[in-house]
Image 1 (cartoon, rainbow, N blue to C red):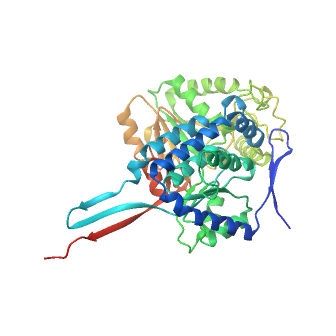
Image 2: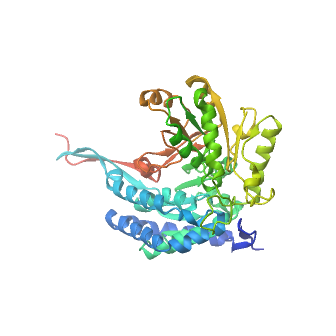
Image 3: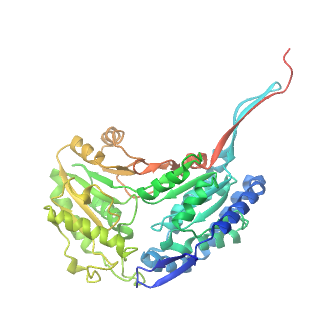
Length: 464
């Protein structure tokens, strides 16, 4: 019996897209085609691979109107934000621009007697398991360097964003990437784990939940397949007493609420120096009250539905538990009539009188809720920021870079921001620690993730 993979639209609850999961035989044949096509792709000059990848992204840009509409139906992001194209183009251009440097040989000696060097070799077939919250951006992070480095790619998009892989394949094929070099696959969990366990891939990149990451690790056990795992976060912001208050409120609230809070590097907890605490909370409440929750196709909507009712119910439960434990909610849901208390449309919330005994301050929420606590010192803020099983990003707000440097190097996280948040810079490695996962994307290190070193030691003449 064929398993159907369905996308239930958070906009109206209907089945927006469905596709049959591949049979084991069909999945094996797809991987075999990818493996067979990879050497010829890797043999093309680097400049040619770059040109075709950039042409594929240009073709994706030409699909913008259709892609933005499909994203709204699939995961609920308001169309006013125009999809993910800013990041797609920035990351592609940067990674293409550094490719020659990142993949260049490391020459130890080139003389009439010896040739000694290290070269970067593609890993073969790269398997990308993409999430639904930023399905294009997270795919591009690995897809672009993988293809440019000479790998073939098998892409599995999340069930909530089934059509993303199809659009990416359509665009990149139009740009000149051969069909066998970039293929999309629809699989259930068992089919995905089976392929990994069969040592089908040279590298597996997964973005998703901690439990999903554990399942990938179990499937890969004993295969020695390298893994890249980006498993979410509980990212803190710390506002010091010398911070620009209005700027901090604007960026941190946007980081907490954009995309209905469904961002692994979104702001989920904020610690504010006590002298600024009351003013920060007051301004944050005013900021959030200006949001408009509603249909993502309405140009006035700034906050769309969460991707599924299950995700919304998780956030509702965290808020209810925190309030029962003494937290104070500051946003009246009545200001957001689209929230009926049981569907995908969820009113944003700010909680105060919170502490780290509450799930909402320790477990990933992945929704439009943020807790705010006062602190009396950098040491207290550091202890609270590090009191988390996650470590993706942290955001520091101060006019003193030296103070920020001293604190940043003690935070258990992958990236530290000063006076900004919720941004992925392609020039620096996107990475994390603790339950956030392992590995790194983008920057020169992003190319290292999808290649391996190969050493050469050639003696040209006989010893005298």
